Length: 64
Image 1 (cartoon, rainbow, N blue to C red):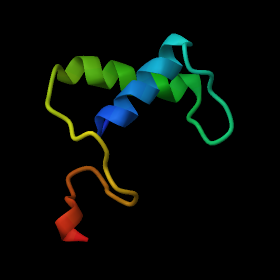
Image 2: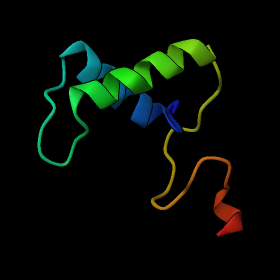
Image 3: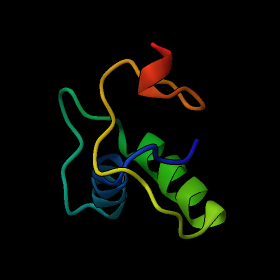
Image 4: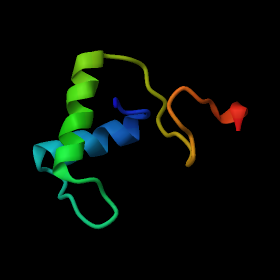
């Protein structure tokens, strides 16, 4: 699953590369690597800076 926001993308790429340690409350390195691979496969896109909690892929904040 590709990242939904730039903040999530930065975190996932940081954990995948080892510059951010995986730990309590953060995804595992394996999960982060899967997100990073999906982001690379998807290519460059414009992502929002942040996405509110509870937002699911394909769903906008106004749908909630």
